[in-house]
Length: 308
Ligand SMILES: CC(C)C(=O)/C=C/C(C(=O)O)=C(/O)C(=O)O
Ligand SMILES: [Fe+2]
Image (cartoon, rainbow, N blue to C red):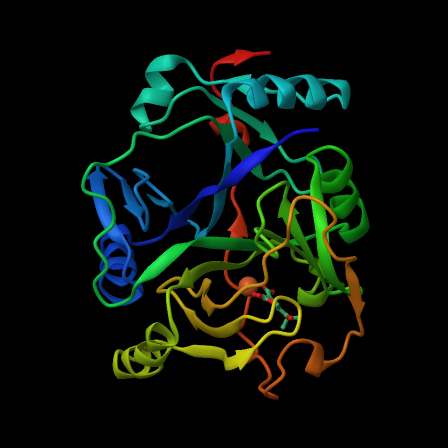
């Protein structure tokens, strides 16, 4: 069974790269490690990047990348994916080095055509992430609204070896990239909840303590950043949460205190009733523009290199 180390990075298309650099660096608190023509690499760890922004005509989700436990797990993934009829491409060495990574594979997720990437390691930084406005602990999760909710969950479970931690029936299925312990690194949301329009739901950064949330409660409104949900506490993972929009209207979440699962004998997944208090113990309800921004950006041009 395929084994993942973690959710490595998320790549987004943004319509004004300079504007988004200022936002993600100065308001969200990510460290800008490198800016090249049309692309910016941010981290919140000793990785070279945990968020990559590309200048693009349309804002949206470009790629989701998973760091594997080992190089052998990349081979394991290739064998598994090919058995399930997936075309997997290995980036040429100069390409993977160009994004500061070791061996890198890409494929198209079959339900909504998202570019998924697996890699074994990124260049590490001696001087790792230095917190500024917020002590971000890690890139936490990405939630995507998929067209076929059941088929997507089946793919991630049966092909990618993700486990369901909990589900709000018909709304969101919270999945762990096994054996990563966090309650979810991927959320499978139902696009039927947003007019059958698949796309990015939100990107989450887990912060280190409540003060990081507290400071954001003031910093975001002071900078006229639209708040779209919370503060509150999510029943699925137990996380304190706070959601706000980025300059393209894509939804970003700060959270603190997520449940962790053991590799052996984890608790059973719960099926939560689809009602507002399954989303927030504290009773807040999301604004209309929560989780609405961000298309799924075409994957094909990213499939470069050798077909395995
Ligand atoms: C309001 C939705 C239905 C909800 O419960 C969300 C939970 C999520 C998420 O969607 O990512 C979390 O972030 C969480 O529980 O940590
Ligand atoms: Fe979330």
